[in-house]
Amino acid sequence: MPLAKLKVLMDEKFMPELIWEKLNCKNQPFGGLGIWRAKVPGGWLVAVRSGGSKGGGVTFYPDPKHQWDGGSLK
Image (cartoon, rainbow, N blue to C red; front, side, top):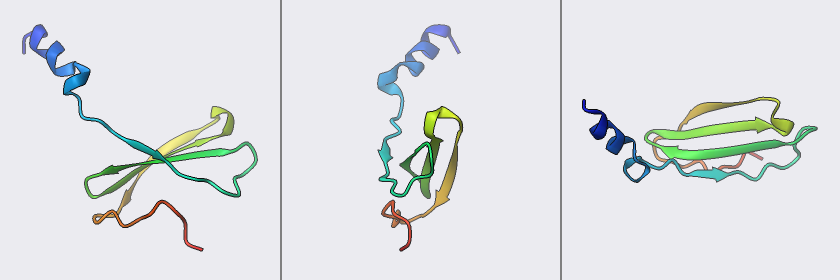
């Protein structure tokens, strides 16, 4: 593939958007916690970051009909 064509493909206006939604975290552990989710085919990408940027991770939550409202069970 020519370099010029590759540059066009990498241009931001041609890149799909991944839209993250911040979840409301209550009763957080010491140091805080940030959780976001993004709607993807078949479910959700869920990203977690602990306070002070000491760690984090991303996981896939299967939910084909996107029924999860972002909350935990009570």
